[in-house]
Length: 292
Image (tube, rainbow, N blue to C red):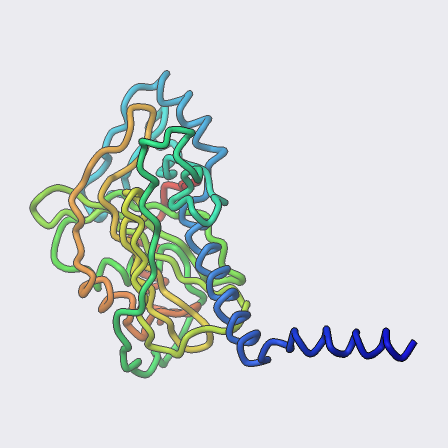
């Protein structure tokens, strides 16, 4: 029996326990990676709706760009005027790690076909966050978010206002979309206010840039982390929508620097000054809705 115990101790000595610090660090990294995947999946959600969209698109023909007046909510219509829009990405959410933008991993069995470009997220800046708004505050609505967004955008004509399905973990976290035309044609911009309550958030003011080269809707996303674990995501797209005939190319209408300044404004939060919520309700009495 003594020989067995001795050999057991010798065997354990050859495999020392890993440092606890490494395990903690790996857990933090894994948590942030999970949070980023969920956020990107949110923006690429609506894969099941896409199949229906393709069928509708074949029957209804090409989709058209709607109103170009900021006071006339418009956007893309499916089937009939005033219908819901769908700006879903061309592939379902929930892809594997090696499948950016919802594309299937691998090369389809063809070794000559290059693998799709991988999404990448890097910290590009750290902002000094100013004080939040004071005075009367109301829960942030999609209309209120669009009202603030249109005031922060560079000069241009806006249209295509829409409210998208948000996966935020509480009220006051809308996900909105609009088109901005600065003279070279409309481009799509999406903004989301988001908190997932997973913890392990970067320090307030951290700015991240996520790039997904093969996804025109999520081509670039600037994320600014605010206080309380809140983050504001601003997406710069290179297309307007996806339908049965494919994407409609569009110029990016914001630079990364401009997107950082907008998303980093300290006014953003789950509550906004009452003027934005009230004026937004009057300016955008109805919004198109999208599953994508």
